[in-house]
Image 1 (tube, rainbow, N blue to C red):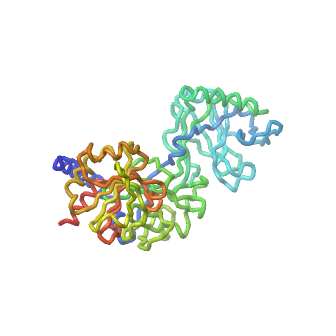
Image 2: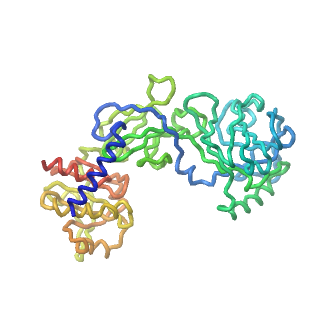
Image 3: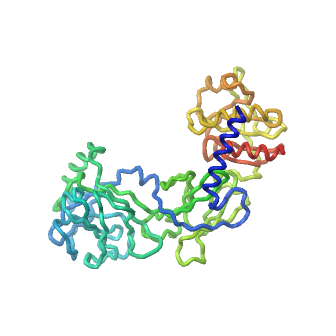
Length: 440
């Protein structure tokens, strides 16, 4: 069985290695790494949000201020202002994208846009949309973008300049998918629109912000994406204390903001045993290159224990009939592998047979300690018997997780005889290769 598993992971690793041969390697590197932030992404929060941008019919050449439902006042009337409209076909509608532009006096945090086609713009094969990118309320000097069959062909930039920029992907709001929301939203805006003419949720936009630039890196045999989030969507990506570095495992262009670090001179991150300082390449004309400098010093603020760290002292309850409380520092003089797992975690379920085989093969040389997070006591108590393994079974709680600075589940922490961390990973194939390296 172990031979089959080795073959499977070996072939997978070979295939992955060929695909990622050109990616810069982070783990086990003690030198500065640089990469271009050429890839365009969006953050997971924006991807999963409703993303509604309401549209209003243009009244001649007058538009009204932004309608904020959350802070709207029934007795407050919106300001209106005159604009210069572009040459167009049919009716025009207008709306606003969130965009932090200090140069706009009238709407400093939003960008005004016009779209031709009126209420039924999305029923046309193609329509034009103009963004007032220079905030002069004159759309005759703007180059229009094209929407095809109710959506943009690609990201629409908030800037008309080359280089890094934020933008949006646009499509007609999917009323059929969010029917109840659409009806409630129509009623809410209808009560507060005042002199505006709302053309309806079903004729408005669903928008996905495109405000991340990132680069893929190779972290052992996994892909790790490091990007920068233009949090205020002003196209700069380098506003200290506002914009955010994002560290996201996986290869999707939708990055998670769970692991984020504010852009600035002290920006650094730690990932499964390694730490790096983050900065833009100062030699580049544009902030489109990232520089990562290894940090070898342990820091209490780092979100991962670094290689060389001493095993934190904690006590955990064993999963057995006569329950005991064991000290993490007194579980044997051999090397120790802590397996932090959850029975409901799909990654652990997928790799559990491989982990079981490793614990059987290297049981004499290594102390195996499985700490379950969130499982029932009965299930964990009978785990060894069910899968024919002989390891210490115990429970992990929030306090232990904090001391181990867990970043993912499952996570495998490998300690030497002196209880110093020598390997930290969430990939069982990488764990096996490290064990083999030690036992050569």
